[in-house]
Image 1 (tube, one colour):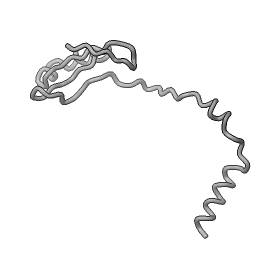
Image 2 (tube, helix red, strand yellow):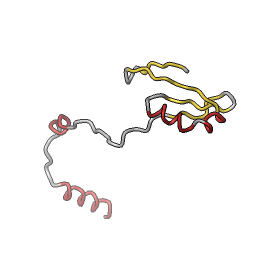
Image 3 (tube, one colour):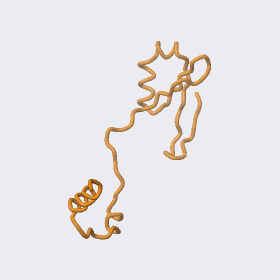
Image 4 (cartoon, one colour):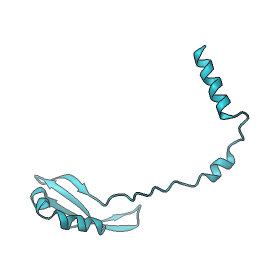
Length: 92
């Protein structure tokens, strides 16, 4: 086992290495370890071939854009009018 300090997440991650044959035999327990926060590196002929990590959460959090929107100038024309004008310029 190798311990790696993840500076971005401010937590230590336990990294296990395991060969392909042992992975087949212990897949269920490896998935439990990944769910508990560990990372598993699968080795093929002694070289890293894959990494098992926990799936990302389904919920995506977008940054707050209120400041950006408040700094934008107000629109002079409706968006539809601008799009039509640009489209007509391309045609003729």
